[in-house]
Length: 129
Image (cartoon, rainbow, N blue to C red; front, side):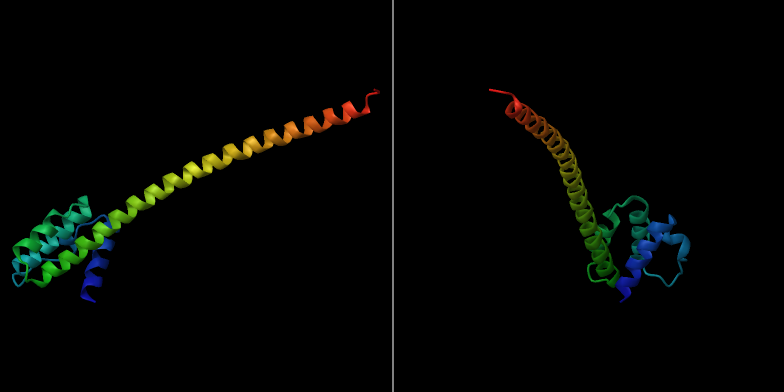
């Protein structure tokens, strides 16, 4: 549940354009890993850089803050992968829409040619032999 709250804070911070360190005061009771976690959140929200999150996991592997950092980093990478997939799908969708428009235009031209051929056939049949 705490991870969801932290992730929610991350999302709210990213949306608001402010840094977490402005919203959360550092107190003497905060551990070094907690301070690094908050700094890492600030860095990620400002630049989408997960370097400090990864550093936190390496420096304090048994810390709850490392677990939280790992969760956020994993979700952020999944989000980036999904964004990449979405971009590919949108590109493919646009190509298909362009192809559909070209096919509709070709269909209209073919319908006009069919109408012209029908008119010519009727005219040919009406000529005396």
